[in-house]
Length: 341
Image (cartoon, rainbow, N blue to C red):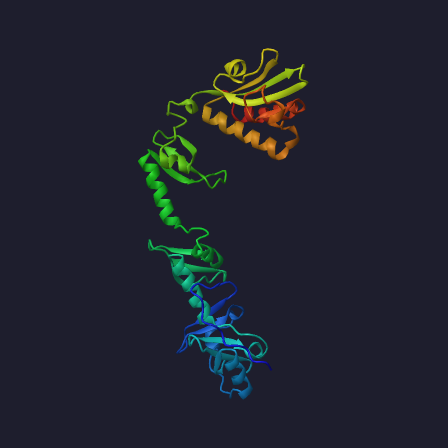
């Protein structure tokens, strides 16, 4: 049988993937056990009083180990790593036919990667062998995937403490006169749900709140707190063969149509529908959601901006004329959910 070269010294931050070992601590020395044997009680990993075949000892030496002894039953051995001195349980079949791995070295690799990421490795997670528990510099315990910690150690991403982040967000909100209620109910990672000192509850981008770039939609006195409208405008330019629909929101839809869209005098415009909304904040949210729905589920009704370039001074929110009934149905739904007060 050809001899296997002894293992080279470990690098400063080796890969830690694919090294699932549990640790049995009820023995005189810690024993690393393959994860697939985690169902075996710790009491079963006792010494097995049988001699070690000389052939096994030679194979172990060639593969970087010493057979510490037989363990559990006649099929298992405890291998002592010649690099770190740790003990790892393996089947004798694994010793004879493959390159065993040292559980202690694997644990040291996890600790090295954690240190490189600015963390302290505590132990493997008992629920999922792809995860570990780490102590951050703030003192809190984090649960993270081993592969994620490798990427943090390689400076490809960063790690943050959820408890510290939550406290930071609450403090930011308090300084601005808001109370952080929780995550965004619509599932956006960039938004949070806040309650203003006046009692108004509002979705706000966290970065905007941190910089103080936010107005309360109820008492803020800005455009988003005043009544507004969602409008649907039909535009026709027979000389250019254009028949378009413009969907938007505005505090003054008529002014928007006549003075702000930049349409030429030859264009025929018809404000076919106007929905009153309680505030600009509500109007903007409903209008944005409708645009997203049309883009996602009906991309064929979206008119490319190059079609109306030089005619309208906008670059989006323009739709084909045949989408009229579709948009009207969505506006019916919005109107039913936000009846005039």
